[in-house]
Image 1: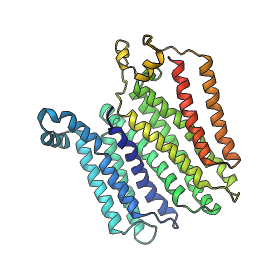
Image 2 (image 1 turned 135 degrees about the vertical axis):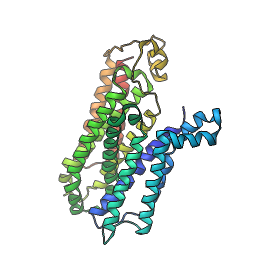
Image 3 (image 1 turned 120 degrees about the vertical axis):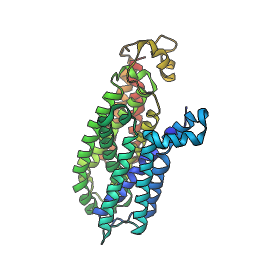
Image 4 (image 1 turned 90 degrees about the vertical axis):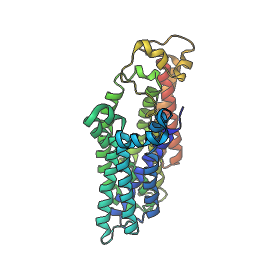
Length: 361
């Protein structure tokens, strides 16, 4: 197992910080987002987006030497050419931040913020160009990946920056939710639709792919999305009721949503390093099956197509998962510990995952 996937969740987090650090100060004048964080995030994008390129170079370097392979990858591979543009855009981003001595909503910095936003979109474009979806599915894959990554970065970035920097005052949060709520709904629709399109192309045989590492990672990612949607619903539709309570802290619930997004980033990073099952061949399923699946079937042969078989343990696990989701709602309604809701979200995800795996093993 290689370590390259660890860079992906950090890369996605850096992208979120870029967009959140640009958008929130543009709308909320009281937010002073540290310029150093924007610069660190931009440097992070440049560093961690290089890891896929480095992986290609190291894979071929034994054949002709590191320097020659590095040159060829940078000049002739789409990953290398896209990375050059990523460095150009991140350099332009950092230069703009330094010239303007930070970002806020005053004076000429409105123009600078708009420019930074466009440069950040350019970074999303270069990363989408070098993506798996673009390489395998052409222009459709590129635009699907672009819309997906852009929407996630904007949604998550605003969420995290707001949770950290908007003052814990009811009026401030009502003003924030007034524009963020409809934006989040639009972003979520785009994320779900584009994600579905990507999944249909990379993993058309969804249930059968659960025996592979890629399919299991994708299932885990989808299960994390369910508590994320629950938290998003609570933060979007029900939070206004709790804002009138003096002891309610919306920042904690926003950060819980952000942590779940980070967990999804982590699973996505691992998943993207696994071979995507574009075409599951029954003759090759034995070798494609993950160690987890082989352990679950305890020496029995791999069945293709997989058979879904209910058992008492499966029913019990799904009941526990349902109780975890209900507990998240009750914790929010009664204004209890937000981080207990995060624990419930994690319990739901992993218990549901085990439940689904017992169905096919």
